[in-house]
Amino acid sequence: MPQLEDSLRRTTAALCVLLGQTPSVLEKNLGGSPSVPSAPAEIALGIPADLLQRRPDVRRAERTAAALSAQIGVATADLYPAVTIKGLTSFHTSTFQSPGRSPGAHNFFDANSFEGFVGLDVNWPILNYGRIRNNIRVNDARFQQAVVAYQNTVLQAAADVETGLSSFLRNRERAAFLSESVVAAQRTVELSLIQYRQGAVDFLRVNQAQVDLVERQNSLVVARAGVAQGAIETYRALGGGWETRIGKEFLPRETIAEMRARTDWGAVLSPDYEKGTDFGLFRRPAEGPRDAAPDTARAKPVHE
Image (cartoon, rainbow, N blue to C red; front, side, top):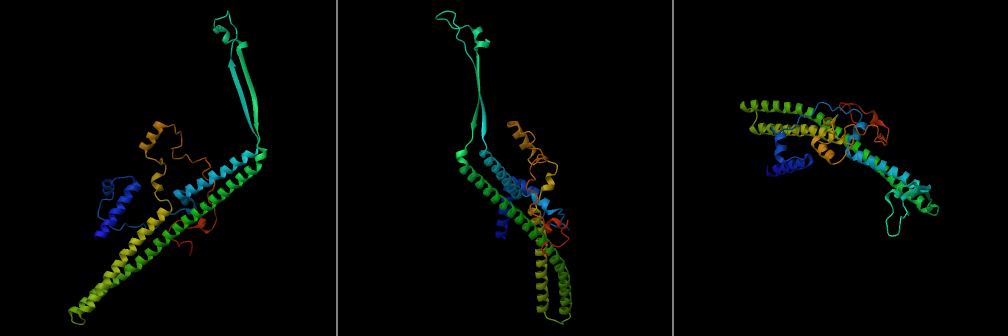
């Protein structure tokens, strides 16, 4: 028990750090008798390719690839001439009324006192084309590396979803079988007690039946916990928690108000800021069986 209590305390502290809450607040939110959470009968998934986009690691890999793609264009722009327009304006006067006296202020703003200069500055690094082309190749290689990293991130996310779904489905089937097994073991204990009272069997038979019942009950509890754990793993693999942010701003209102009081953020902090942007530049990188995956977890995983 001390070891389990220590593990529980460590897990609670980790949740406090992730949620940004104190242990007392978290314990109040988690109040009630501790028990294995009841998993839903089915998990509504929708289109997995769309749900994976909610994962922070997938979004980060996508934005990194988009940024490095833009760097290729920046490096390519160095191949073309850069034209700079330069200008200079000034006022001066050299009109003196008499020696030792300052010029009149009214002469300073006369038309004859104005002078200006406009010119063009052309910079074309023709002799550096080798270095520029190599820089383009470097940026292209970095972009390709980011694309591969993005694809690997999506594949890993899909594997996490597949693992969570498989755990959810198989433990649910196992729990159904073990539930029937527990009922049969309970009947066995009852029959062995009747036989023991009538002297047909010794108590060793009763004890063996009770031990078998306890083992099956323990396996049933483990299977039910596996169902809940599988559901948690699936929701986490899909970036779970998005339902609580639908139509809302991503940051708390207090934090947004504090940030806007310091800086003009415009519409950046609004919930629909990404609409109309290039956020979907690398969406749906691969077509395949996963795009046609079922909407709920009642069906079998893809690998079957």
